[in-house]
Length: 404
Length: 106
Image (cartoon, rainbow over all chains, first blue to last red; front, side, top):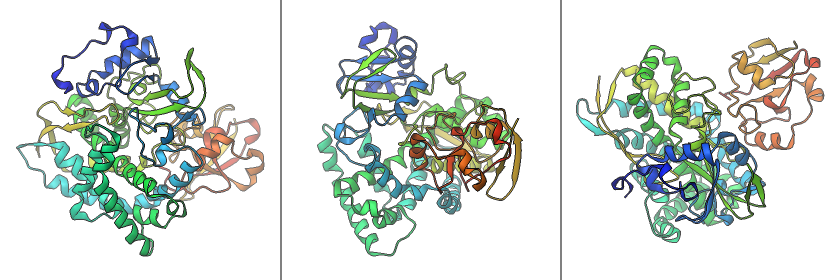
């Protein structure tokens, strides 16, 4: 895999040969220098040949906002390939255009709306506290497994009211759905069949029961969702599993890594815990847990003098836009009290903006409130292993030692 | 400079003077009024500056535009008098404009 290859210098190859969709560049963490070159020399970049075919890269902050906000010209629909550079046949509301997108999204959004979050806060805090209290002291362990995965899986089980003892299945399906390498999309769907069967059973049960406040019950009882066919139901379930899992998980890990690399910022936070919400936003920007979202042009469009043709694939590289010095001052630096800290691309913009962003922020805020309350020290013992993916920007492991 | 009144869900009122040409969103950020985030910086692309317009002002402010309505569709607790603060530009005749903040927008 990528980590075994020598790291490539982005200036050693002609610009048209640059292929930022190569997952190895993300795994060996050299991708930033490639994006920097594209932002400076060719911000709307065409790669004619890659494993996933020809595609455009949008790398500047403002261009990404413009493309993301224009759903008429830039489609998310799965019939055109969906929202990831690797074509996906899976149908769910993130991979639909209006009006269908609007109906299905509205069926899901109440669970992560403010009144429901207030109900969840106590439970999230309780579970976070228990995970932190149980951590081994003075021995090395993997933060990803013991904290990030554990907490986000527990939260997901809570949101779905999924059988709690079997919650490890959610993590397995989430991994299978996006990061585990398989040959074809069809093969992936086959491997996910047990997930679809399990949720199909739960859905049928919830439909017969009176409405409750969990995501599955809400889906089962909503008019929009009742009219979903099996493929759409399965697609939406997986979207919620992945959306509520990898992204928050990887940002939790990132928060520990960022603090380790920037001890001055950790000191700031200890001195002024009121900075936690701002630190959470900065970590979400710094990490950018989804590297890109893909669109497909519905008509010929000109962007910065480049002719994007109808049917072309376009990657909006959030990870690059969030490092754009023209929009964000000192964008490479991690500054927890920076000005306009919330103005980042990680949640996307326009009608597909992350539906669970408030929940994600809440989980991260509580994690750090509880860490500071306990005054525990988290020492990073070695480099992280990064995920081999051009979509999920995250970590497989991060060795740490905790003391208090 | 026109005075604009922001009313929190708790009933607390904050009255601030805003420059002509600024917006209900940017005015809230400049004056540290909580409940308005303006994550997209005023480009009608995030829906985090949702406000309710006081009955007396509805006619003067007018309905939401097309893109604004799309973003509002996904905001929580939307009402007929919902607007996005970034789409309301402060003009001289908005002296006394009163807007209400939704519960838990942040």
